[in-house]
Image (cartoon, rainbow, N blue to C red; front, side, top):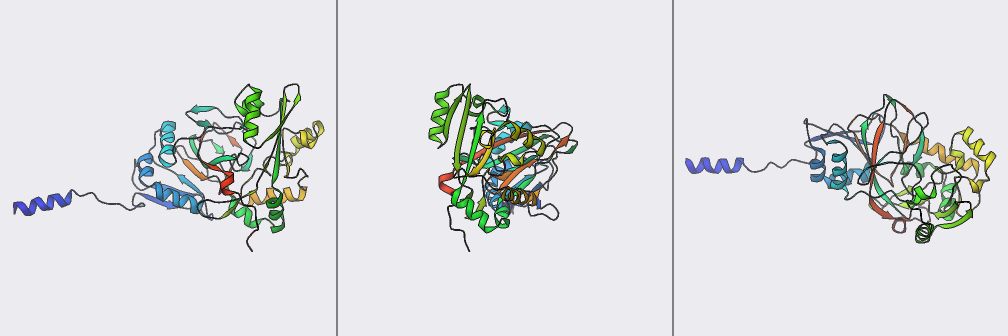
Length: 350
């Protein structure tokens, strides 16, 4: 009897293997196909440990859906958020070749873009104008606004499917050109954008990054870079509309600001503007098609304190709603990817 009981005790101490979804539930927002909302079944489930144990599952779902909202887990604030990034990607990336003002919170964790609360931020993919960009972007809600203020996401696969074929073929063939002018007091200074006060360092960065540059005088800098518009996802093989041609075109700004800027500058002298890759203007009707495609694909899930939103940056763009009340969302970028490894130069599949 003693031996039998001993054996039973040994068996009872064997670890119980749980499936990857035994501790969580998943759902989609009503009527939408993204993001996948993952919530714990048990109170107090620790996010970093669970995510580290289920990293392959998260990668699989991220590639399938494009965006994951992790809600209701125990994490531990910004420090826990940084640990979550490392557990699911590795070290966060620095914010290079900056295009918007952000403050460092800690160790490559940044505030979301500083922008007036009564204005929206148009959907875009993060740093797709860089030769090396983050494959993943993470958001964490520290303080939720009292009204609106969501971070809407936009499927780049859907945008590509819905654009007219001839428009996509034009951009695949030509690419787009992003032109920036620094030094007139609008937008970032070149010192902030490139994180240096040394012209020689800026020039070397531009050479390394296939960016044309010139110094027109009086402390001003103009840069111009040609970039692709369509990428092939390295995991799924799907094509995605991955560029800043719409976001940085001057006409995407609010109409009163567009009128003001055009009263001051020629098109190639704007703080930010885009063209076809050969330098020719993008037709207004094409830009309207592009903006409409982004907005049709937009999905907004209101923030709750503690939420973490993880996006595949190639598959999902993001923006920001106007908001009321205090709002604090922190951001991290991870998993560097080179354009050279994902560029799609045609022909489009039938």
